[in-house]
Image (cartoon, rainbow, N blue to C red; front, side, top):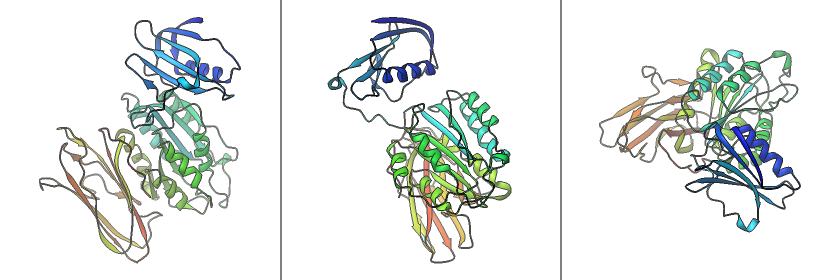
Length: 405
Protein backbone atom coordinates (compact mmCIF):
# COMPACT_ATOMS: atom_id res chain seq x y z
CA UNK A 1 0.00 0.00 0.00
CA UNK A 2 1.23 3.47 -0.89
CA UNK A 3 1.29 5.91 2.06
CA UNK A 4 1.05 9.68 1.76
CA UNK A 5 0.78 12.49 4.30
CA UNK A 6 -0.63 15.99 3.71
CA UNK A 7 -0.66 18.87 6.12
CA UNK A 8 -4.01 20.05 4.71
CA UNK A 9 -6.50 18.39 2.37
CA UNK A 10 -8.99 20.53 0.49
CA UNK A 11 -12.20 19.66 -1.31
CA UNK A 12 -10.38 20.27 -4.60
CA UNK A 13 -7.61 17.84 -3.61
CA UNK A 14 -10.11 15.11 -2.88
CA UNK A 15 -12.04 15.72 -6.10
CA UNK A 16 -8.81 15.64 -8.12
CA UNK A 17 -7.84 12.27 -6.65
CA UNK A 18 -11.30 10.84 -7.19
CA UNK A 19 -11.42 11.91 -10.84
CA UNK A 20 -7.88 10.68 -11.50
CA UNK A 21 -8.45 7.27 -9.96
CA UNK A 22 -11.76 6.50 -11.63
CA UNK A 23 -10.07 7.20 -14.98
CA UNK A 24 -6.94 5.18 -14.20
CA UNK A 25 -6.71 1.75 -15.89
CA UNK A 26 -5.05 0.42 -12.72
CA UNK A 27 -3.90 1.82 -9.41
CA UNK A 28 -2.51 0.60 -6.11
CA UNK A 29 -4.39 1.06 -2.91
CA UNK A 30 -3.12 3.98 -0.94
CA UNK A 31 -3.65 5.77 2.32
CA UNK A 32 -3.72 9.56 2.55
CA UNK A 33 -3.26 10.83 6.12
CA UNK A 34 -3.76 14.46 7.01
CA UNK A 35 -3.59 16.99 9.79
CA UNK A 36 -6.26 19.46 8.66
CA UNK A 37 -9.34 19.47 6.43
CA UNK A 38 -10.47 22.56 4.59
CA UNK A 39 -13.43 22.83 4.88
CA UNK A 40 -14.01 20.62 7.92
CA UNK A 41 -17.23 19.20 6.40
CA UNK A 42 -15.44 18.03 3.26
CA UNK A 43 -17.62 15.65 1.26
CA UNK A 44 -17.91 13.71 -2.00
CA UNK A 45 -21.67 13.54 -1.82
CA UNK A 46 -24.03 11.58 0.42
CA UNK A 47 -21.89 8.85 2.06
CA UNK A 48 -22.58 5.47 3.58
CA UNK A 49 -22.01 6.29 7.25
CA UNK A 50 -21.19 4.54 10.48
CA UNK A 51 -19.92 5.94 13.78
CA UNK A 52 -16.32 6.46 12.75
CA UNK A 53 -16.15 6.67 8.98
CA UNK A 54 -17.78 7.83 5.76
CA UNK A 55 -17.56 5.65 2.66
CA UNK A 56 -18.21 6.63 -0.95
CA UNK A 57 -18.39 4.26 -3.91
CA UNK A 58 -17.68 5.26 -7.52
CA UNK A 59 -17.67 3.23 -10.73
CA UNK A 60 -14.41 3.50 -12.67
CA UNK A 61 -14.65 4.94 -16.16
CA UNK A 62 -14.48 1.47 -17.74
CA UNK A 63 -17.35 0.33 -15.47
CA UNK A 64 -15.37 -2.82 -14.59
CA UNK A 65 -14.35 -1.90 -11.05
CA UNK A 66 -15.58 0.10 -8.09
CA UNK A 67 -13.48 2.67 -6.26
CA UNK A 68 -14.16 2.95 -2.54
CA UNK A 69 -13.04 6.08 -0.72
CA UNK A 70 -13.09 5.55 3.04
CA UNK A 71 -12.75 8.52 5.38
CA UNK A 72 -11.61 7.34 8.81
CA UNK A 73 -12.34 10.20 11.21
CA UNK A 74 -10.99 8.89 14.56
CA UNK A 75 -7.54 8.10 15.98
CA UNK A 76 -5.29 8.84 12.98
CA UNK A 77 -7.66 10.45 10.44
CA UNK A 78 -7.04 9.49 6.84
CA UNK A 79 -8.59 8.69 3.47
CA UNK A 80 -8.20 5.18 2.12
CA UNK A 81 -8.53 4.73 -1.65
CA UNK A 82 -9.11 1.14 -2.71
CA UNK A 83 -10.93 -1.01 -5.24
CA UNK A 84 -13.65 -3.33 -4.00
CA UNK A 85 -15.60 -6.19 -5.45
CA UNK A 86 -19.02 -5.15 -6.74
CA UNK A 87 -20.64 -7.65 -4.38
CA UNK A 88 -19.15 -5.78 -1.41
CA UNK A 89 -20.93 -2.54 -2.26
CA UNK A 90 -23.95 -2.19 0.05
CA UNK A 91 -27.39 -1.45 -1.24
CA UNK A 92 -27.69 2.29 -1.67
CA UNK A 93 -29.58 3.98 1.14
CA UNK A 94 -31.99 6.82 0.52
CA UNK A 95 -28.93 8.97 0.06
CA UNK A 96 -30.65 12.07 -1.25
CA UNK A 97 -32.36 13.81 1.65
CA UNK A 98 -32.89 17.45 2.64
CA UNK A 99 -29.92 17.02 5.00
CA UNK A 100 -27.51 16.44 2.12
CA UNK A 101 -24.89 19.17 1.85
CA UNK A 102 -25.78 20.73 -1.47
CA UNK A 103 -25.37 23.49 -4.03
CA UNK A 104 -26.74 26.92 -4.92
CA UNK A 105 -26.58 27.76 -8.63
CA UNK A 106 -27.25 31.36 -9.66
CA UNK A 107 -28.05 31.63 -13.38
CA UNK A 108 -28.90 35.04 -14.84
CA UNK A 109 -29.62 36.45 -18.28
CA UNK A 110 -27.07 38.67 -19.97
CA UNK A 111 -29.99 40.91 -21.00
CA UNK A 112 -30.64 42.03 -17.42
CA UNK A 113 -29.52 45.20 -15.70
CA UNK A 114 -26.44 44.73 -13.55
CA UNK A 115 -28.32 46.23 -10.60
CA UNK A 116 -30.84 43.39 -10.59
CA UNK A 117 -28.13 40.73 -10.91
CA UNK A 118 -26.24 42.27 -8.02
CA UNK A 119 -29.26 42.18 -5.71
CA UNK A 120 -29.40 38.40 -5.54
CA UNK A 121 -25.61 38.06 -5.63
CA UNK A 122 -25.27 40.15 -2.50
CA UNK A 123 -28.13 38.35 -0.75
CA UNK A 124 -26.60 34.93 -1.41
CA UNK A 125 -23.24 36.10 -0.07
CA UNK A 126 -24.71 37.84 2.97
CA UNK A 127 -26.92 34.88 3.89
CA UNK A 128 -24.21 32.22 3.62
CA UNK A 129 -21.02 33.95 4.71
CA UNK A 130 -21.38 33.38 8.46
CA UNK A 131 -24.15 30.79 8.86
CA UNK A 132 -24.09 27.27 7.42
CA UNK A 133 -27.44 26.41 5.83
CA UNK A 134 -26.28 23.14 4.28
CA UNK A 135 -24.81 24.52 1.04
CA UNK A 136 -21.16 23.71 0.41
CA UNK A 137 -20.90 24.65 -3.26
CA UNK A 138 -21.87 27.94 -4.89
CA UNK A 139 -22.09 28.19 -8.66
CA UNK A 140 -22.86 30.90 -11.17
CA UNK A 141 -23.34 31.31 -14.89
CA UNK A 142 -24.38 34.07 -17.28
CA UNK A 143 -26.62 32.87 -20.11
CA UNK A 144 -28.15 34.41 -23.26
CA UNK A 145 -24.71 35.15 -24.69
CA UNK A 146 -23.39 34.40 -28.19
CA UNK A 147 -20.99 31.76 -26.90
CA UNK A 148 -22.17 29.60 -24.01
CA UNK A 149 -20.19 30.20 -20.84
CA UNK A 150 -19.09 27.49 -18.43
CA UNK A 151 -20.77 27.18 -15.07
CA UNK A 152 -18.32 28.36 -12.41
CA UNK A 153 -18.18 26.25 -9.22
CA UNK A 154 -16.84 27.52 -5.90
CA UNK A 155 -16.33 26.08 -2.44
CA UNK A 156 -17.03 29.40 -0.71
CA UNK A 157 -19.24 32.44 -1.20
CA UNK A 158 -16.33 34.83 -1.54
CA UNK A 159 -14.97 33.32 -4.76
CA UNK A 160 -18.60 33.03 -5.92
CA UNK A 161 -19.01 36.74 -5.21
CA UNK A 162 -15.90 37.61 -7.21
CA UNK A 163 -17.00 35.44 -10.14
CA UNK A 164 -20.47 36.95 -10.43
CA UNK A 165 -18.98 40.44 -10.13
CA UNK A 166 -16.59 39.62 -12.97
CA UNK A 167 -19.42 38.33 -15.18
CA UNK A 168 -21.94 41.15 -15.12
CA UNK A 169 -24.33 41.60 -18.06
CA UNK A 170 -22.49 42.89 -21.12
CA UNK A 171 -24.55 44.13 -24.06
CA UNK A 172 -21.71 43.41 -26.51
CA UNK A 173 -22.20 39.70 -25.80
CA UNK A 174 -25.98 39.69 -26.31
CA UNK A 175 -27.92 38.09 -29.16
CA UNK A 176 -29.05 41.49 -30.38
CA UNK A 177 -32.48 40.38 -31.58
CA UNK A 178 -35.84 39.43 -30.10
CA UNK A 179 -36.46 36.28 -32.16
CA UNK A 180 -33.76 34.17 -30.54
CA UNK A 181 -34.98 32.22 -27.54
CA UNK A 182 -33.14 31.96 -24.26
CA UNK A 183 -30.65 29.13 -23.79
CA UNK A 184 -31.44 28.86 -20.08
CA UNK A 185 -32.46 25.21 -20.33
CA UNK A 186 -29.03 24.35 -21.74
CA UNK A 187 -27.68 25.66 -18.44
CA UNK A 188 -29.87 23.22 -16.54
CA UNK A 189 -28.83 20.31 -18.77
CA UNK A 190 -25.14 21.08 -18.24
CA UNK A 191 -25.68 21.45 -14.50
CA UNK A 192 -27.29 18.02 -14.35
CA UNK A 193 -24.21 16.55 -16.07
CA UNK A 194 -21.67 18.21 -13.78
CA UNK A 195 -19.22 16.24 -11.64
CA UNK A 196 -18.18 19.10 -9.38
CA UNK A 197 -21.25 19.81 -7.28
CA UNK A 198 -23.94 17.86 -5.46
CA UNK A 199 -27.28 17.90 -7.25
CA UNK A 200 -29.44 16.47 -4.46
CA UNK A 201 -31.64 19.13 -2.92
CA UNK A 202 -29.84 21.94 -4.69
CA UNK A 203 -31.27 25.38 -5.35
CA UNK A 204 -31.21 26.81 -8.86
CA UNK A 205 -32.01 30.51 -9.01
CA UNK A 206 -32.90 31.69 -12.51
CA UNK A 207 -33.39 35.38 -13.24
CA UNK A 208 -34.68 35.67 -16.80
CA UNK A 209 -35.10 38.59 -19.15
CA UNK A 210 -35.43 36.57 -22.37
CA UNK A 211 -37.93 33.72 -22.68
CA UNK A 212 -37.16 30.34 -24.25
CA UNK A 213 -38.87 29.32 -27.47
CA UNK A 214 -40.82 26.08 -27.84
CA UNK A 215 -39.06 23.11 -26.25
CA UNK A 216 -39.89 19.64 -24.95
CA UNK A 217 -39.25 19.71 -21.20
CA UNK A 218 -40.23 16.14 -20.32
CA UNK A 219 -36.73 14.71 -19.94
CA UNK A 220 -35.33 17.80 -18.24
CA UNK A 221 -38.06 17.88 -15.59
CA UNK A 222 -37.69 14.14 -14.99
CA UNK A 223 -33.96 14.53 -14.32
CA UNK A 224 -34.42 17.55 -12.07
CA UNK A 225 -37.04 15.71 -10.05
CA UNK A 226 -34.88 12.60 -9.77
CA UNK A 227 -32.28 14.72 -7.98
CA UNK A 228 -34.74 16.89 -6.02
CA UNK A 229 -33.36 20.02 -7.67
CA UNK A 230 -35.52 23.03 -6.82
CA UNK A 231 -35.77 25.61 -9.62
CA UNK A 232 -36.83 29.11 -8.58
CA UNK A 233 -37.47 31.66 -11.32
CA UNK A 234 -38.06 35.38 -11.51
CA UNK A 235 -38.90 36.28 -15.10
CA UNK A 236 -39.17 39.81 -16.44
CA UNK A 237 -42.68 40.58 -17.65
CA UNK A 238 -41.24 42.66 -20.52
CA UNK A 239 -38.92 40.18 -22.23
CA UNK A 240 -36.00 40.97 -24.50
CA UNK A 241 -36.88 38.02 -26.73
CA UNK A 242 -38.32 34.52 -26.94
CA UNK A 243 -41.95 33.49 -27.00
CA UNK A 244 -42.58 30.82 -24.35
CA UNK A 245 -42.78 32.23 -20.81
CA UNK A 246 -44.84 29.27 -19.66
CA UNK A 247 -41.83 26.98 -20.11
CA UNK A 248 -40.08 28.83 -17.30
CA UNK A 249 -43.14 28.47 -15.10
CA UNK A 250 -43.46 24.78 -15.89
CA UNK A 251 -39.89 23.85 -14.96
CA UNK A 252 -40.07 25.79 -11.71
CA UNK A 253 -43.53 24.63 -10.73
CA UNK A 254 -42.94 20.94 -11.47
CA UNK A 255 -39.75 20.83 -9.38
CA UNK A 256 -41.55 22.28 -6.33
CA UNK A 257 -39.95 25.64 -6.98
CA UNK A 258 -41.98 28.64 -8.10
CA UNK A 259 -42.01 31.26 -10.84
CA UNK A 260 -42.72 34.96 -10.39
CA UNK A 261 -43.32 37.38 -13.27
CA UNK A 262 -42.65 41.04 -12.54
CA UNK A 263 -41.34 44.23 -14.14
CA UNK A 264 -40.89 47.91 -13.45
CA UNK A 265 -39.32 49.65 -10.48
CA UNK A 266 -39.84 46.76 -8.05
CA UNK A 267 -38.46 43.99 -10.26
CA UNK A 268 -35.33 43.94 -8.11
CA UNK A 269 -37.44 43.13 -5.04
CA UNK A 270 -38.75 39.94 -6.63
CA UNK A 271 -35.16 39.00 -7.53
CA UNK A 272 -33.88 39.70 -4.03
CA UNK A 273 -36.76 37.80 -2.41
CA UNK A 274 -35.61 34.57 -4.04
CA UNK A 275 -33.02 34.34 -1.28
CA UNK A 276 -35.76 33.63 1.28
CA UNK A 277 -35.72 29.92 0.37
CA UNK A 278 -32.00 29.77 1.19
CA UNK A 279 -32.58 30.15 4.92
CA UNK A 280 -36.05 28.59 5.07
CA UNK A 281 -34.59 25.42 3.62
CA UNK A 282 -37.15 22.75 4.48
CA UNK A 283 -40.23 22.77 2.28
CA UNK A 284 -43.18 20.98 3.87
CA UNK A 285 -46.02 21.82 1.49
CA UNK A 286 -46.18 22.23 -2.29
CA UNK A 287 -49.32 22.30 -4.35
CA UNK A 288 -50.58 23.89 -7.56
CA UNK A 289 -54.26 24.73 -7.90
CA UNK A 290 -56.05 25.16 -11.24
CA UNK A 291 -58.94 27.57 -10.68
CA UNK A 292 -61.41 29.76 -12.57
CA UNK A 293 -63.53 32.74 -11.59
CA UNK A 294 -63.89 33.28 -7.85
CA UNK A 295 -63.58 30.89 -4.95
CA UNK A 296 -61.67 29.69 -1.92
CA UNK A 297 -58.83 27.22 -1.45
CA UNK A 298 -58.43 25.59 1.96
CA UNK A 299 -55.06 23.97 2.60
CA UNK A 300 -54.78 20.97 4.93
CA UNK A 301 -53.99 21.80 8.55
CA UNK A 302 -50.25 22.19 9.09
CA UNK A 303 -47.79 22.42 11.97
CA UNK A 304 -44.61 24.25 10.90
CA UNK A 305 -42.41 22.57 13.50
CA UNK A 306 -42.84 20.08 16.34
CA UNK A 307 -41.00 22.08 19.01
CA UNK A 308 -42.14 24.64 21.57
CA UNK A 309 -40.24 27.35 19.70
CA UNK A 310 -41.71 29.89 17.32
CA UNK A 311 -40.18 30.58 13.92
CA UNK A 312 -40.50 32.81 10.90
CA UNK A 313 -41.73 30.43 8.22
CA UNK A 314 -41.96 31.21 4.50
CA UNK A 315 -45.26 31.41 2.64
CA UNK A 316 -45.13 31.62 -1.17
CA UNK A 317 -48.22 32.15 -3.31
CA UNK A 318 -48.12 33.02 -7.01
CA UNK A 319 -51.31 34.30 -8.57
CA UNK A 320 -50.88 33.55 -12.31
CA UNK A 321 -48.68 31.33 -14.50
CA UNK A 322 -47.85 34.27 -16.79
CA UNK A 323 -47.40 38.00 -16.32
CA UNK A 324 -50.22 39.85 -14.58
CA UNK A 325 -53.05 40.66 -16.95
CA UNK A 326 -56.57 42.07 -16.77
CA UNK A 327 -58.10 38.73 -15.78
CA UNK A 328 -56.55 39.03 -12.32
CA UNK A 329 -58.71 40.96 -9.85
CA UNK A 330 -57.60 39.97 -6.36
CA UNK A 331 -56.12 37.25 -4.18
CA UNK A 332 -56.00 37.32 -0.39
CA UNK A 333 -54.96 34.72 2.14
CA UNK A 334 -55.43 34.10 5.85
CA UNK A 335 -53.34 32.02 8.25
CA UNK A 336 -55.18 31.24 11.47
CA UNK A 337 -54.41 28.99 14.41
CA UNK A 338 -57.06 26.35 14.96
CA UNK A 339 -57.83 27.77 18.41
CA UNK A 340 -58.36 31.23 16.88
CA UNK A 341 -55.69 32.94 18.97
CA UNK A 342 -53.60 33.97 15.95
CA UNK A 343 -54.63 35.48 12.62
CA UNK A 344 -52.34 36.68 9.81
CA UNK A 345 -53.73 38.17 6.61
CA UNK A 346 -52.07 39.16 3.38
CA UNK A 347 -50.83 40.37 1.06
CA UNK A 348 -50.28 43.39 3.25
CA UNK A 349 -48.11 46.43 2.62
CA UNK A 350 -48.16 47.22 6.33
CA UNK A 351 -46.49 43.93 7.24
CA UNK A 352 -43.82 44.41 4.59
CA UNK A 353 -45.05 41.49 2.50
CA UNK A 354 -47.21 42.83 -0.35
CA UNK A 355 -47.61 41.24 -3.76
CA UNK A 356 -44.91 42.07 -6.30
CA UNK A 357 -45.90 41.08 -9.82
CA UNK A 358 -47.39 37.60 -9.61
CA UNK A 359 -45.59 36.67 -6.41
CA UNK A 360 -46.44 36.90 -2.72
CA UNK A 361 -43.60 35.95 -0.36
CA UNK A 362 -44.25 36.44 3.35
CA UNK A 363 -42.53 35.36 6.56
CA UNK A 364 -45.06 35.26 9.41
CA UNK A 365 -43.92 34.33 12.92
CA UNK A 366 -45.71 31.12 13.92
CA UNK A 367 -45.53 29.03 17.08
CA UNK A 368 -44.27 25.47 17.15
CA UNK A 369 -46.51 22.54 18.12
CA UNK A 370 -49.52 24.53 16.92
CA UNK A 371 -51.98 23.63 14.18
CA UNK A 372 -52.72 26.28 11.58
CA UNK A 373 -55.05 26.55 8.62
CA UNK A 374 -54.41 28.62 5.49
CA UNK A 375 -57.19 29.79 3.20
CA UNK A 376 -56.82 31.58 -0.13
CA UNK A 377 -59.65 33.68 -1.58
CA UNK A 378 -59.23 34.43 -5.28
CA UNK A 379 -61.11 36.47 -7.86
CA UNK A 380 -60.46 36.40 -11.60
CA UNK A 381 -62.53 38.32 -14.11
CA UNK A 382 -63.15 35.46 -16.55
CA UNK A 383 -63.64 31.71 -16.67
CA UNK A 384 -60.16 31.23 -18.12
CA UNK A 385 -58.15 28.69 -16.10
CA UNK A 386 -55.53 30.15 -13.77
CA UNK A 387 -52.81 28.39 -11.78
CA UNK A 388 -52.02 29.29 -8.17
CA UNK A 389 -48.77 27.96 -6.71
CA UNK A 390 -48.56 27.51 -2.94
CA UNK A 391 -45.32 26.66 -1.12
CA UNK A 392 -44.59 26.52 2.63
CA UNK A 393 -41.06 26.39 4.06
CA UNK A 394 -39.64 26.00 7.56
CA UNK A 395 -36.33 26.20 9.42
CA UNK A 396 -37.06 22.79 10.92
CA UNK A 397 -36.37 19.53 9.16
CA UNK A 398 -39.02 18.08 6.85
CA UNK A 399 -38.56 15.28 4.34
CA UNK A 400 -39.02 16.03 0.64
CA UNK A 401 -42.71 16.34 -0.21
CA UNK A 402 -44.43 14.91 -3.32
CA UNK A 403 -44.04 16.95 -6.50
CA UNK A 404 -46.77 19.37 -7.48
CA UNK A 405 -48.35 18.90 -10.91
